Length: 158
Length: 223
Ligand SMILES: [Zn+2]
Image (cartoon, rainbow over all chains, first blue to last red; front, side, top):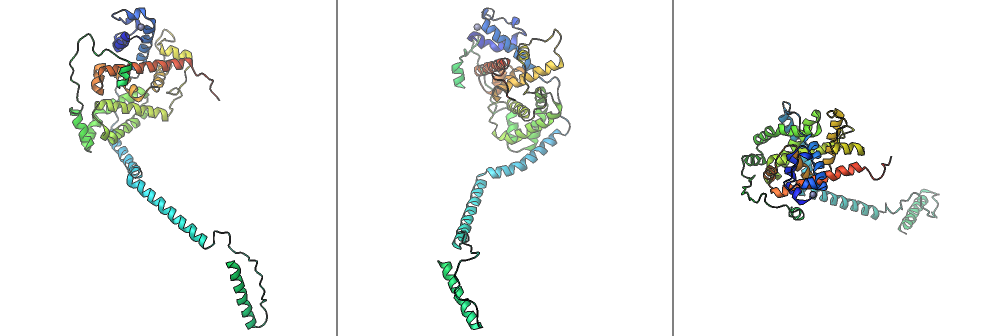
């Protein structure tokens, strides 16, 4: 669109209801098909846009303000939590909780490792050669049990 | 803004006469005093804002959506938004301009979320239909039928969805509310040249969007 028309575009669009109703002082529209066709389309769109005018005045139903306030209150409750989650304190608290969880988790894992629970060494059955048969009288049986315990401890230490 | 006026220079004055204009200072109006009270959490002032603008907000919503049932829900949302964001109102524009933009945006949010009818907003038009509607060619000599009016309504909503929020509210304030360039300048705090450039750009985008619709999709829709 040429500048002379572009500058007067709003006046031209407001002036006439049809392209034929336009009168450009310098007669540009009559001689320039590019400008006249573009103005014509814009004018048609103006008609479409004006169809968005409400055909009637729409008064809000009674109690509208009360319902607006109710909505604000409900949104306010939600936004308190949102604000907390988005606040610096909320973020810090979240990070602190996460840090504590990581520290506690690391402690539990390292403690379990130290006690051997995480090494896959939980002994269900151990291949130890129990040399001393638990037989004979009570004194012999006691000696055999003590000997087996000592052997078992040696085996675990290895 | 300066970039826009630089690429699209309009003569700064018309008819050789420079009109001395005093731009309305939106910080010193009676309305500004009301806004400050709302910003200070004065509920009576907020009620005044609601009562002052509720009919306008309902009319804007009804004009765009033509749906009475959802108008109240959207209007409530508009005023809740006003309540929560009025602290950010910077007095560069009039309160009505600000409320208008919020209302139009809420209508478009609604359209995006809820595709109410098949035709509304996401409707597809044939190239012939689009050409006829855009060029205001009646299908017959008679007045447009209800279906045609609905199609026109839906087409313009769809075209408006292709431009920015700011352009959309500006062109609606011009065409639907009937404000002059001078009034828009006062309402928005922008100079008249900028308003003209923005309106021209918005209109061009609408024309291009309509042309794209007329041409239709380049590739057939995949099913
Ligand atoms: Zn031209």
